Image 1 (cartoon, rainbow, N blue to C red):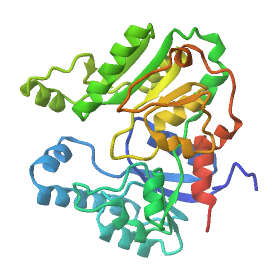
Image 2 (cartoon, rainbow, N blue to C red):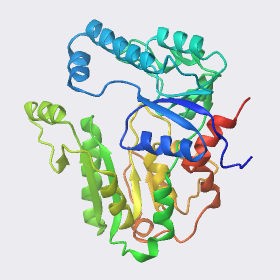
Image 3 (cartoon, one colour):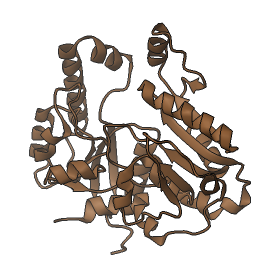
Length: 335
């Protein structure tokens, strides 16, 4: 069998979190591996979901249970070799119990790109692990604490690899780039401090900060106006255009997460230098102090020479962090 066709003619039920277009990229990757894929979002994304989540827990859980039933009704007449769920704590226990009865021979696989924490559903990702044959997480710390979680970092998609091979064709006029969302005021303050520092050091720093209107208004009522932010999430095309022009990417992880986010692998896959406040990156086999700089949130400093000089070498160990390698690891590991 062709190694790239590790899911040749296999039927896969994929239930996943909608985040930018990563769910689409994952579905395409599984299909490229030979699979026939049925995809469903792990939860409804509409105004009712948002309203009930914030107004009434009981009604919210009932609404979500009804959604899980709608998924089940659409798939109950089919069978699958694999059931693959990203996140999944959003779905009630009975959904997994009935799904297993319907597909007793299927291999149930679970992946998390969030850290273990209490959720609005009244559970954590640890509560759903027993429903799966194997569960993975991007968070090394969580995996060390839970023997049933297997460590598997995130990935970069093919477009970033293509960006790396064509990087010499585009002038790189941005020294440092940050793209992220703001849900804590401290994160916003940190970006603004970096902006001031870069200005003093003659570093061209470009950032795109996305905030919800609700969070913006909350801060405004508290007397804090968030300057230079956007209500619209940045598009994938805009991210690619900014990456083309950038020498170095800045990663500022959320405090509750020890795992490396997607932006880290996209930056490295695109052949960019990386500055990160996540010290856990030093534990990774691809860590390279020449191209990856770890900064402290307590003692902020940025090396001007580091950010102004583009990366000149490619670490071949990064190839195993492509989306195709990531998917193959999940679906072919049996231990």
